[in-house]
Image 1 (tube, rainbow, N blue to C red):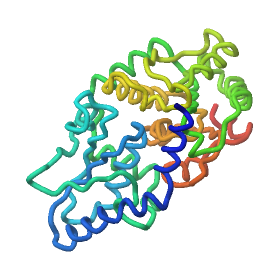
Image 2: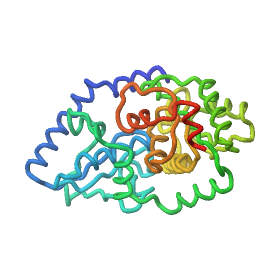
Image 3: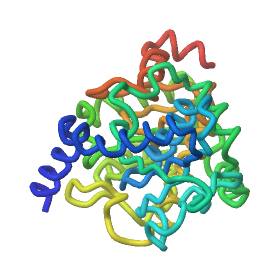
Image 4: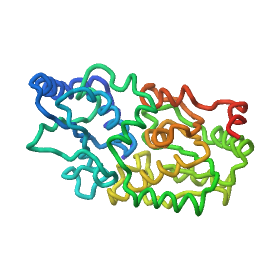
Length: 310
């Protein structure tokens, strides 16, 4: 029921509700830090895969100098077939923080207001996020190998395109598909790329790209797409497989010659994994914060900018 989903999502994202809902968590965190007790922050909210990673590095940056901080974990149930009983980060990455019940306190994180009334990540850069991620996480070899094989067999010097539809309408301006493909046309002209790696949660957008570019479009065979305006990560199905598809998409976008993208934590992580990846930004977030702030500032936005890529 899209109307009900929209209402619930709007309520969830409302600042007043988040501030009030986080009061108890902020108080508990203050008591822990004042007592200098060890704690781990658990990203427990149902959020997208990219958003989970973004919040992980924001929290690592925010607490990095605090003696009691032991790291981050995530019981986000959307990406584990065992639900909230498992740290999902352990499924996709090596070297991650274990959930340390008993050895330290667990602080639940659903949104930044659970931690502070001040905005988190204000000074966090793409380069620093890249460093923090590599310091605390290692992508499991099987995912890297899967992306490497797909890239070598299908992409070559492809440009990447990422369009995130569905519930993104609550967070960013709408992207006109024809405007996006006009930019893709210019990218193909200037870069002499053979293929367009297309990642999207919208079957309609994929069909639009196929009609325009035909066999030049390359994509992974995703089982999970948005449905009636509901994000793909909220659609029922195999939780681990959703995470695998998300991580593979991030890796493949990071391997492209450049990336044309709308607002999304998922494709932002292609830039965080590969800070030298040129980005052409389409659309604008309603709240400009990490990681979109710096990506927007450095976005290639002209023909002359494209020419410098070749």
